[in-house]
Image 1 (cartoon, rainbow, N blue to C red):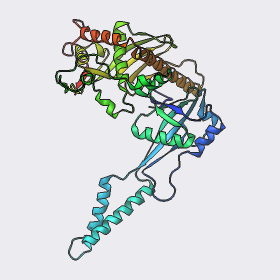
Image 2 (cartoon, helix red, strand yellow; image 1 turned 90 degrees about the vertical axis):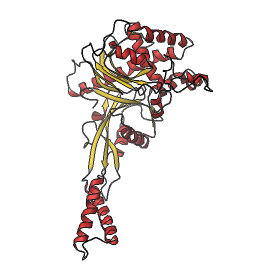
Image 3 (tube, one colour; image 1 turned 45 degrees about the vertical axis):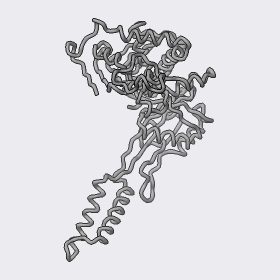
Image 4 (cartoon, helix red, strand yellow; image 1 turned 180 degrees about the horizontal axis):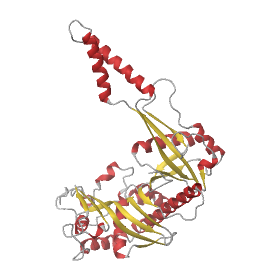
Length: 419
């Protein structure tokens, strides 16, 4: 989804290094120097990438009025892939073998002719690539918050992130550090000289291990026996990303224990409601996954059961308000990625440019509000009183929903999947 229209999706990075701090001639020149260029001679690389403007993927005419939007630099990353399908390669070779067989007195292609048919097919593939017959192009909008040293990318796929990080380093001699729950926990603790506490973070056991959990009473390490595994973090950017899933569990608790009101240090009171979506995964690697789609996903008895049997939220649908603005979004716990965020209405913009600038400011405000919400949790999570909070959450998990939640069978037939 683009950042300049419709619902907004993004992943975020911290910019580290001696990068520009404002949209100036240097930044514009660097974007132009590394703008997207098609390979002019011969077959291109399988992946080509370069900068374009945010207007469309053909536009490489960078100018201040196209890039500068208040504190943001707005531009695009174009990625072209060139890959001939395997079936096409096989077809070329087969046709070449058939042509050789038709000219043979035996009616069959010899081994030498088959090798020649394969070489000819390879040349045909190279010609196709050079002619751009299998080119696939896309552009992804990038918003660089120069004031705060943050960068938002409108596509969180691994292939896009890989090209973005590589090209950004080449262009600006600076590094992009993914902002996930684990890296942000490290940043939070590092600011107060508590990096050792970050290393010591372990998943919180809000519930007892399920009966089918693999640890036994005679295990050599008793601490691990009662520590959730959080299997998804093995594929995460940071092994502490499970803290973000604890955050979503804490938000769920806040919604029911404090009516969704969270006091933050710098943003005052923030108001949170969970709606539309609840995706959960077993922190003990036993009970599988649950996905719920309805107006009030946490009101279902099945959601209670998932929480009680050790499943943690991976994604939540949220309504978030700072008292002035309200956003409707889907939030990833371990990734901190935002999906399909509906921004507040823009009513005072006079020009399309003003609309884009206000959208970027509202997106930045959403990013800031989520950071403050996460910081409020981290402040509790890393304090000496966390064990008491964890025990209170454990009691809430065991006691919640008694006699007041709706079952899928008797409710309004929400969409629900269990894996």
